[in-house]
Amino acid sequence: MNKGWRWVVLLLPLIAFVVLVGFLLRGLFSDPTELSSALVGKPVPQFTVPDLYQPERSHTQAVLSGEPMLLNVWATWCPTCRAEHEYLNKLAAEGVAIVGLNYKDDSRDKAVNWLNTLGDPYTVNLFDATGSVALELGVYGAPETFLIDAQGHIRYRHVGDVNERVWRGELGERYRKLRQEFAANASGEQSK
Amino acid sequence: MISEMVRIVLTATVLMATLLLSMPSSAQNLEAYQFDEPAQEAIFKELINELRCPKCQNQSIADSNAELARDLRDRTYFMVKEGATKQEVIDFMVARYGDFVHYQPPVTFVTSILWWGPIVVVAIGGLVIVFRVRQQRSAEVELSDEERQRLAALQSQANKDEER
Image: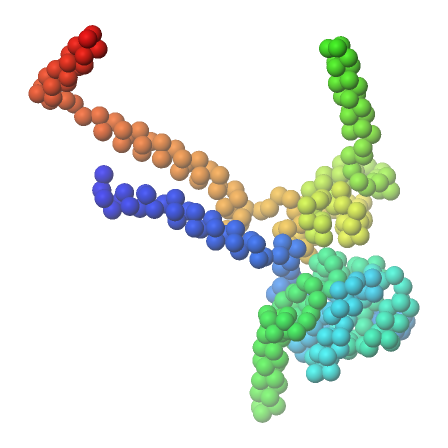
């Protein structure tokens, strides 16, 4: 048998072992509950949903376009939502547009009370009592945060709380990039 | 003594069997979902066992107690009731929750390793066996006349040593 071939055959198990170790090592640091959204790249689904403060007012998917923004899914029964609320307030103060989708809350009063006591970081407040809008969005828990571009297309989904680390990471990076593109387009159109 | 042991074992077996039989096969009370047509009911039952709860990952939406699983069951119920086919419901769920939501992943480039991986591994095993057998065969060299004489001499020497 050829000498070169012999080396390859002898090394094959070692290579297979290293690949397997790499694969399993990656598995140790990945979170299986973090699913990527099936809606990334697609337009926001159509919906009509009442306003949280004013039940007689309703909103459609149109509120989720016009500028890059976040759509935050939250509820008062969700402890992690409480944990991220301060940070959302901070982002809102910095000028980040965040639309809130209240997801299957215990009651409207409870949700309103929460925003009155903890502060309201949302530009628009949607009240999804039955979870039908959330189902259209593929929401499977709270909190979840969607990044939506100016055309109303979903660009990214983050599962879990938004905090300093997440905002420095992929979610924040993508938002800042969209903002830059948006600003460049806006100034481009003005100069025309 | 032995008959006593047999009796204990028998009692234990009967107890286990009763326990197992009395356990509900599904965690959910599915009686709330009533159908007029048995065909629709059959589709519904198949669907809720094939669709996976995205929240509680290793349970179907039939088994899960999660709120989300109930919402998905309700949605499945209404869709089937309104005459949706099985595929339509699956497509609806996959469009929102991804391939993850269906226990039967489609054959795509990413999932191809799941479908063809085992066959590839068996094929590699077969190749290794063929390779080794061939190698062994070619290693069996014929002895020359001189070598044969030496072998015979050594063998007779060994026999003599044994006799002593």
